[in-house]
Picture 1 (cartoon, rainbow, N blue to C red):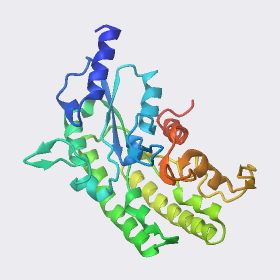
Picture 2 (picture 1 turned 135 degrees about the vertical axis):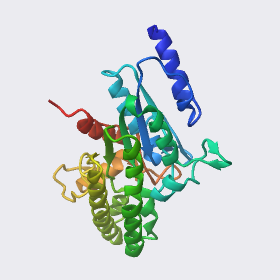
Picture 3 (picture 1 turned 135 degrees about the horizontal axis):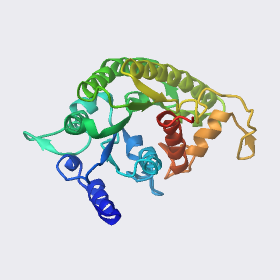
Picture 4 (picture 1 turned 180 degrees about the vertical axis):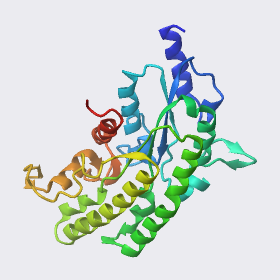
Length: 294
């Protein structure tokens, strides 16, 4: 197949409706990158009017672009679903997709179906999931610790089921996961109780991410440490002398404001999603694990 032919086939494959990749013919010798997760895996960002929309500027897109330089026959399949929790990833109900027996297939079912057919040709899997289990626990200027605890316990029960199902059909495919940045650090800028809320949210994020790291490790999934590289989530120092509106702010607060929409004025913000620079930062951390420097 000519270079033009490969490019045309690649465009058709990536533009196919969700789930269609398992039925379309891919170029001979192609390999696959399967991307799973929530809105971050789809690259969701808010419009200037404040409406979240899926984009092609997410970390998956950045990883894929980088890998193409050394894997020119690589194709990407994005199954990420905005709003997905560990529970909906298993059961479905959030995102539309292909149906079977009158029911919309869950993201996990679609992933397992894909890997059942293509595991031998799949070069890697990335995943981020669980943030939506706990994000709603921080509302009204407080952290609902009971909600956080319950959310973490749910992830502890359901994430292993997700990973076990993937490993059952793809035992040797490399899985790369990520822990999360803490968007609620932006509350620090309000001062007073906002500082307290930022500190409490950081503590909850560290607990949650520690659990994610442990679970992923059990299933031989390598973790991109987004929490601390690049987002410096635990660093409340001012060693970088970063300033916002003329005031010196902690390193972790500056990073959240620089790389997400949390400090953007309404109506576009505040919004928990990464901006294009933030997504690239996340992708770079993934790539440091996928292709570690020699």
